[in-house]
Image (cartoon, rainbow over all chains, first blue to last red):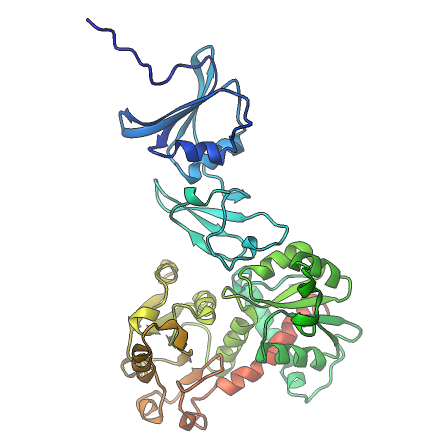
Length: 156
Length: 308
């Protein structure tokens, strides 16, 4: 009998696992967390993995605890993601991400005439509105424009 | 109630009680707005009028309002000759102008500019129109006109014309919903009221009806708020002509109107209201333009705190 081995992604000893990310959004999750080439910790991720509730993405970040605010930003692109804090290969804490009511400097306003897209010394600011269980919309604090689609494509 | 140092950016920032207080104040200032009384309430105060895009009516009426209250105005002058052309941003402009004036009236072409200005100014800002978003003094004067010439509570109102892009009708809908209203929206299908606004109104238990015919509704409403349909909204000039001809207020149309119907229009009009309507008791749009003075006087006096 052949032993079925899971080679896709290894368990981590210590760190954060972001599970149940909407399929195809793992790279955007890294982006929204500000994780880029100068990030020192080890990151591994799978995209479009089969799970009990259909396809999903998973991101594992080793030896690094992200702040609650950072993690909650993930709701903007994947409201149903879960956060697992791992110690000694065990899940010591499991949380759903919580929708923040307000976000700053993460998303670009899609209204080209918005003052936040000009040369003013301001960050973009949005109120977060929950459309339904799966969808989130953002309302620009300045121009009141609502972004209800393609939020991931407008990440700063 | 004090509105001292309050910014006036959007009507949505005000409660019904605050709106009533502003309209009550405007009513008290009406004789002075007509020049029947001389007031010195803003004596020694400087109001900066920073208009970064052309505007005739709003600028003139603000200037008249300041003069009627005995204050002084400070002008930006032409944008071409100002620091803006040297590349100064609005944030710095607000910081600097706050040192020169007691209140800033700002009109700016970018959406959301007035809200941003409040982050950098240390004096109250009155939004004189920011791009296509808000024009609160227009909404306050629309409400004042309706209150003076008809009534606000439970009003049967029709709004006609460009309901899709018209910021004045969007803000007015929100404000009237605080008083309960029966609203009818009259527009061609391509310029219908945005569905989010209709949904919000219905959530607030406002009855909403939509049609494309003025004839159908003219006998049933107390106020008809007319707006201009702009040619540039149509790709096909023929389509524009067709729509324009359908949305016209003529003497004939008014023959089926109730005796107390009042017609409002934010002006300028082109040919959507025929001149023959001007002399009828239904026409309120020139009075409406005058009411802009007491309303702006009230906002200036309340925000500077000279009336508390």
